[in-house]
Image 1: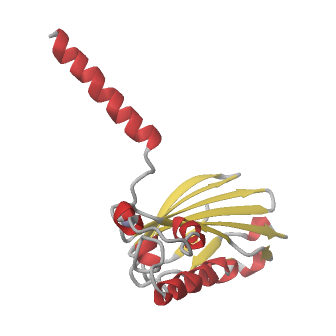
Image 2 (image 1 turned 45 degrees about the horizontal axis):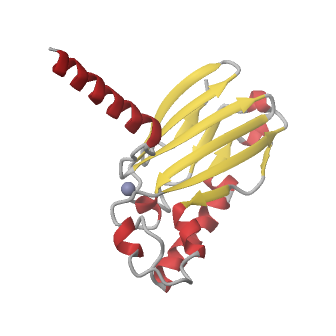
Length: 183
Ligand SMILES: [Zn+2]
């Protein structure tokens, strides 16, 4: 029994450390979006699996892949093109701030890393984007249209979590049903 108990503890610790220290695994085809509306400020955090954005999850290895990453960044930075709040809310937006391991490694691509590709073959990578909107009439912000399914046809769903002064809600968007209704 004592051995069995220690085994259980060891397993529990392994599970805990996996949860605490490993990056949350993503599911290909599924993105997430977190929205927080506080006063006149709407903050959004979008996370998309890189494979659904550019078709790969490693540092770009040729010009074509570099172009794909540049194009993706341009698309995702365009806040109002990605997320279109109700017109009546009169929201303005700064460009989205895009982060991705694909971008970090891009800067190092000039150096020679012979074992680079092999070492990262099994890794997943995301595109993370932060958006900030300022809305003159936040009380009129009832809906936000998400325009990602058309430019990113490999994206199958987007799970949205939102928090506003009136409550919390979750919504799953799919192609053809891509309008968020705020609580
Ligand atoms: Zn992946």
